[in-house]
Image 1: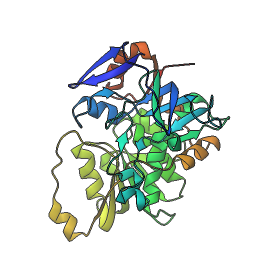
Image 2 (image 1 turned 90 degrees about the horizontal axis):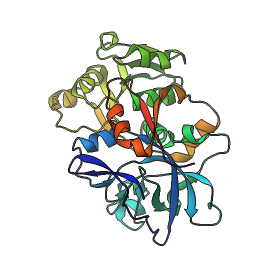
Image 3 (image 1 turned 45 degrees about the vertical axis):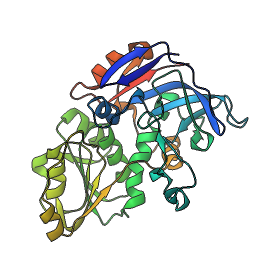
Image 4 (image 1 turned 30 degrees about the vertical axis):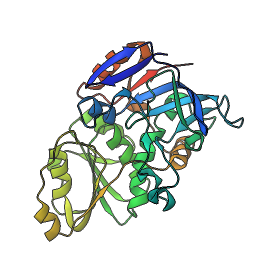
Length: 318
């Protein structure tokens, strides 16, 4: 089969990859659409030593699997877990000690014609959600994880730093809580997407120091972290949604003195994400900046790294 392969920080389009055979408990999924994520770009830059097929945001059709899912459109949670380690037994399976992660850790990903995932990871796509829109399920779930970790209400002042793909989704999901929200970024055209939904936006200079209860860093760069940190009041909470390819320097003493809570945040609830899409409470269409066929996947990656570009989708099957 055809797929986008990463090895030694180099991408190649391969046509000789064997079609996977699903082991017991897993399904074979024919991929329809997949989205290029910042994590994919970070892997390309060496964030983690991964070799294989990239991609973890996808919609597909079950080609082999249980009868109730056969020929149905599905999305899939990316962590394949063992079910018996201490984290799985305690309900924290996304931190499974033996997990593989789709397109990230020891499991081939979604930028190919087929993939395999455990049946328990798959979620049917509601009929009223298009295949293209459903490709956003995984990053929306990641955005919603913040609300699983931090109680947000209308009484909170919240800052989101970053107007990129994830920042846009984080902002839209947090806005549903009714909190006092500000989103800052560098690109007026991206911030306009949020302003059109009634979300307050601005630039770094608009951020008041020590003003916010919660700040969410979505840029993956040191400057974004610095903005998010200085915005927090004492005993505020800093949520990190970004992965960093390099090391991050920070003033640990100030975190101690101000008693700042630092939270890492990644994968989140798929059912809630699908529900938001089905009820049309989010608008992801403006985030789609380009569509490429899988055969043009290398060009898609090149374009996805262009400054100012949001989501690039790969069209893989029909």
